[in-house]
View 1: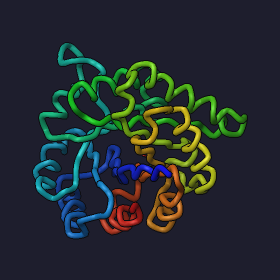
View 2: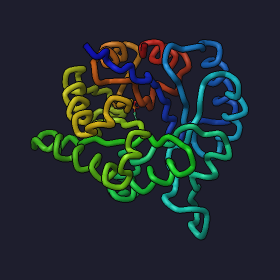
View 3: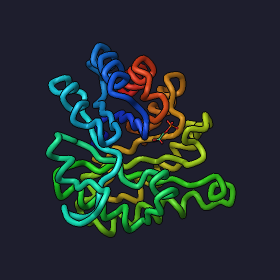
View 4: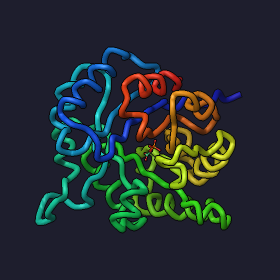
Length: 248
Ligand code: PGA
């Protein structure tokens, strides 16, 4: 009998557009005091704070990343940051295709796939987000939507798809306090895993959407949920540390 592959457990804090220099220092000090964790852990602060966060976390075993990157190499793209720049600051991860970017900045499946490719080109691990809106779920389109979003990445990346982290984040669960039940999330994760085909065994699939200290263990206990992408609860060191400890 072939033993099951143990995929890396990963918990990533997405600070979104939150933080302050003093607040970040306190949050990171709390997190470092709670380390080490059984899972890999990373935080993704607003871009401007990356150098300070990198300096604070250097040598701690906690990684850092960005919330977005350009699909382009450096050049005339006002307001953007290239993946090569993120790599210069020691980022390990970059979130691409977060639903807030898709909804508020009109990012298409294709653009998200190109951002993932740009990240991989610079040695960063893209955390590719997929997820359906409430309307899409209620009209029975969940599978079709996440399949379409993931397919764009599969088509763009080819065999390099094996190097991504995937995050399933139902839009209706983000910041709302409504979590997909462990069974609902597991069902989508299993379908995403099947879609990944031969590459699936090594790809961590994170769940995101109102993960808290008190629901993390049940979610992370599902066979195809390999960790979490955490928004609001990542802004509190104690809460986030408890979530990190739940991923084992
Ligand atoms: P939330 O956000 O944990 O605040 O729901 C998750 C996310 O958007 O990544």
